Image (cartoon, rainbow, N blue to C red; front, top):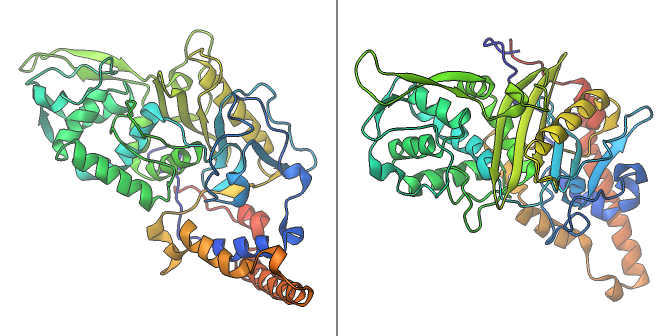
Length: 424
């Protein structure tokens, strides 16, 4: 628990997975490292893309996360995943250890809607003091899309940065996003910095076109990436505070000491509740979204006991606006019950800046080059002797990789027992 009383998340320093080594080992001796049949359950129906989501998905965070469908590896006594999940993509992760407990099409690129505001906040929050004053000018909002959500910023009125961040987090106000974007030097600069921040976080499924999440050609993210972004944001005290605030007063139009205010309530229905939906006990944010293209999206963080979980749900099949919250609540319930009784199917990777020197070499491009060298010639071109030699070499590589991985890291189970405590 952080000093502000809200769950926070830290990622380092920590022991790093030998990503490249374990990938080579998996290719060299698949029988040695292949997951058990329980590691991937039957594909769950979540739209036509469930069984064939499109181009190959990223393997960042683990090879299982690149596979379509539901990935989970239960141990004896583990609860079953909910049977009625309909989202095209979702993920359940331990916010502290980074273990991914279960996932469904984790790296499937989808329109993120306003959940991309988490990346906006993670990128821009450190730049401005909360008491800095902003004056609204009409041209600051010229890039806002028609029908955008808005907190109610009035032309030529002044607002503090603290006001604007409340507008971003609670009202999901695109006008508040563009006000801060103007302070940051404009849309082009802000979008570039958000994409750079995504690369730093290794959120490689993410491409930002509009800083507010409004639909734009090529703008995508994934359940995995949004969870990475949320985990990064939750390390910032102001991010945690804004994400957990259910309601606040926002300045209206007027001047002087008697300037009116009006109440703004969070649009996060698991935080404030709604008719037909209870507040989720222990929820501390983070962000919801909706557009006609993206459907409903949501990333939430909740704490129960000494465990903090992150869940992202993208585009449930049900058009009901509460479905994304119901499925998130079901996955949180499952995650708290399943923690310690499932083997992780992947991990949330650290930012590039937290990798050991040279660790950035474990990019997908470098992995492909290593695998090209390790795999040898096509099977049809190998002689019997060549195959035997290749097999021996591959086995040696695999054993070396396993030694490199297991000795310093003690495997998935050891990392879970060695979870870092929340900062006090």
